[in-house]
Image 1 (cartoon, rainbow, N blue to C red):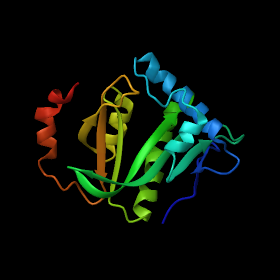
Image 2 (image 1 turned 135 degrees about the vertical axis):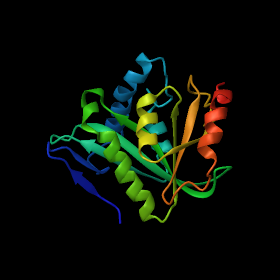
Image 3 (image 1 turned 120 degrees about the vertical axis):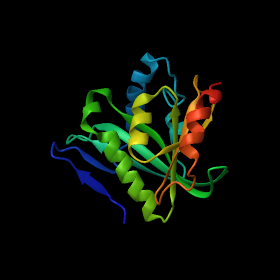
Image 4 (image 1 turned 90 degrees about the vertical axis):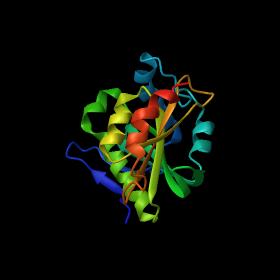
Length: 193
């Protein structure tokens, strides 16, 4: 089962990207959403990227948008389907990426709803793990993910970004690594690059 659309009491709709929503609108949303991060000194490669680059990043992905009654894109998230081979998982994953909410809509729990709807999309494809990453200092994303069942499993450094990214994984039927939390508690400080 996947969800094609959620309608909130305030008339905001969360749905799979319809044809009338352009990639330019999605990129504009991401640009404005990342202005908050830039003020915190975090420069994401997503900010200011070309629409062509956005479309390239969305290859094999399902994109969701939150739109106002007049069809303004106010939040977005995409889930891409791919295989990985890392210590924490070998096989198919749903990769949550390009998450952004316009600052003036930040109190509406749109990121939580986008996370929920992408979880359902991934599970509908019989995939057991969802993965994402974000800046180590991005506490809003960290709190969102950790409060919704994700575990910190790795870190990485993308050359386009000016920060270290924390990698999060969420196993829908429980984390298979009982010692994961304790290991990270004692070793996360070693991962800062």
